[in-house]
Amino acid sequence: MRFDIDRLQTFYGSALGRMAHEMVAKRVSALWPTADGLDVLGLGHADALLEPYRAGARRVISAAPDLQGAERWPAEGKGLTTLVEDERLPFPDALFDRIIVCHALEEAESPHRLLRELWRVAAPEARILIIVAHRRGLWARAESTPFGHGRPYTRSQLNRLLEEAMFLPQASARAVYAPPINWGIISAAGDAWERMGRFAWSGFGGVLMIEAMKRLYIEPGTPARGRRVVKVAPQKRSLRAPVDKIRE
Image (cartoon, rainbow, N blue to C red; front, side, top):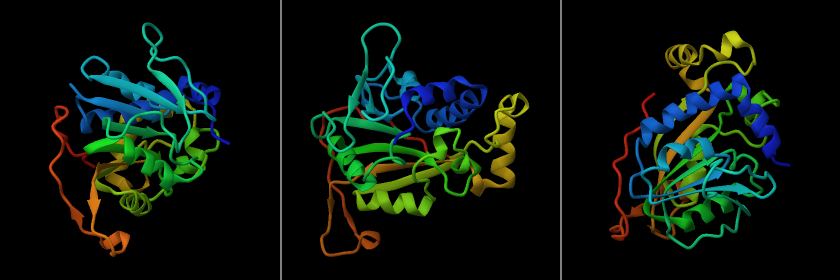
């Protein structure tokens, strides 16, 4: 069973949850500072990560798995949230230029089928950002948080899963190095933990983030890890924003 919306709200309403969100959001904004003129989708529990793009994006939609539930977002004005089935997203093909997946992949019944459905709704050369619990971090063992539920991943495991779904990994980062303990002295020092973690134990961040690009064709008859991607020109359907790489 998924970590439901009530528990997600409780966690992200706590000091520890706010700190975790802030550390992840800083990495997301460094990767995608704007999404002006683009169509943006968030899947899972991504409302707060989508908020910075509402002003400039052409379209922003927050999709929550039906077994998780959703809260109204934004609080005022037109609602931008919808409940969906993981493997049957109610969107046309090739619609979204940017996709953020947070608290969705770990508890999906079939991660591969979910990624293939995301591939379907992604525009040519679209960028997808997967945010998951890192298998080697402490947060994957913290059952009181949403990162302690479902399948955590290593970078190689997630890269392989993305490649099999016809996405090409582009950049990766880890975040949230503070221990998952809801003490004020810890949650108030998130930036210090991040700086120290990247320097002292860079491989053990609690959250793993991988950006990948949609590819349209892969030559048949070759194994997933050795397939050669055939590049095609993207359709002229929307402005493409430049992408900055995540830096460790």
